[in-house]
Length: 430
Image 1 (cartoon, rainbow, N blue to C red):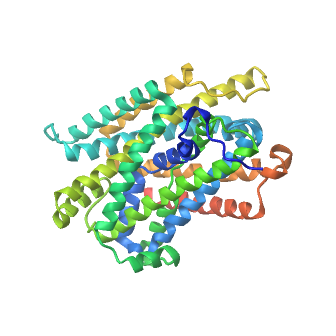
Image 2: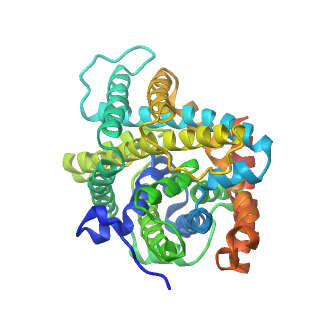
Image 3: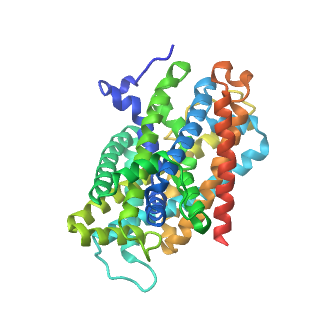
């Protein structure tokens, strides 16, 4: 029988313990890409494509629920399962992918944090080629992220995420209400799947919306966060489904709000991060300076919460990888040891991630974001395929945790969809 079992370390904060990992998934998954993709899609196609945000959030829910199901059934993270059971080539491919992904996502997040704050507080004289304010604030955000992760770990992270999520969702959702959309059209766009301008780029925007919402490699970090909450075994499966449902519902709401804002605020001539700046300026013209500040505060909370989540969780992935490889070389069958955040591998990757990401500040943000979008999209079909294999074996996970027919259909559809996403993004690069 499933029971809701919050971590005793949270004392009376039962609901925070219940939905905490899901909240972190939501906050980490919503980054700069979600902001501009939702805004531009709304500006190009209007609210008729809101359904795509909901479908995208559902696909990410299925993937994350699948990796949680594997971990609860076997005691292994999804990374352990893949590296141990899918062959040696996966071990080398994943490390190569993780390193590349870290560089692009780190650079994109640091640049987005720096850009957002530089609009509000430009204290340095603009440079000829480099936005000095963006560089300054980007470096500050990266350093602060390291300090917060090292000083408080997961427990501090979950408290900070609660504050940032409150700022992010209240400000962005209020902005979506303030711009005054046609609420009947909004309801229709959420229910009836339509693709405006189908032969004129409409499909590309729909695919971008569905693929961009909810994060990429960061979804596997959910396994480490539920370990922090001491979740294990079948009794915690319902708890995971509830907090993932809450997390991805919030992710969907944020994406819906950005599409609505983009549909009501003129985005003509805006590109990349200039969407945030331009949209904020045009909101100030229409509604007053307070609307500009409110929108940018929500945008900052979105990108900084994503940075914090990545800085705290992605070193888990690297440390877990090192632990698995070391034990395999020692022929140690027990590879279920928890990741130690004090381990040299964790601390090394945290510092490396923060420092290397700073170098991305000297490159054009639009190019960094473009390559990150491709690299990030590559992970989703790989995860869908891994879940089809790992959770498809009852001798590995048990009959109770095995993929059901509807889950198999969704995973196959997700695999096909994200292969298409990658193909479209690669084509757009050239």
